[in-house]
Amino acid sequence: MVYLVKYNYFQFTKDRSEWTGSQLVFEISKKDDQTEICFRHEGLVPELECYEICSKAWSQYVGESLLSLITTGKGQPITKEEDTNLKIVRQLEEKQQ
Image (cartoon, rainbow, N blue to C red; front, top):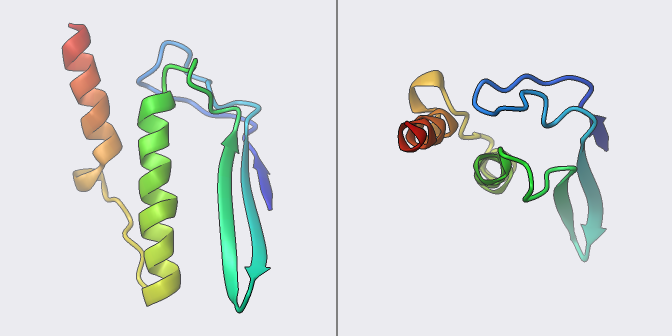
């Protein structure tokens, strides 16, 4: 399954459209008697300003929340109050000032 990012708007990067044109790819396959899900964000490269923040966020969303949803039936959605990405962004902004 592939999602094409047609439009995005970040408030925390100079280029607010860094993801535009990138693809979110989920490969779902059978491995032995289990289902395997592989995820990659094509176009999210280290040269992008958002790379570090987005990589950490994807690790949480896919590696923790989605895994929890699949294995326990309850994901770990991030509320605005708990938004770790926002916390990271604020820390980076403070360092830049």
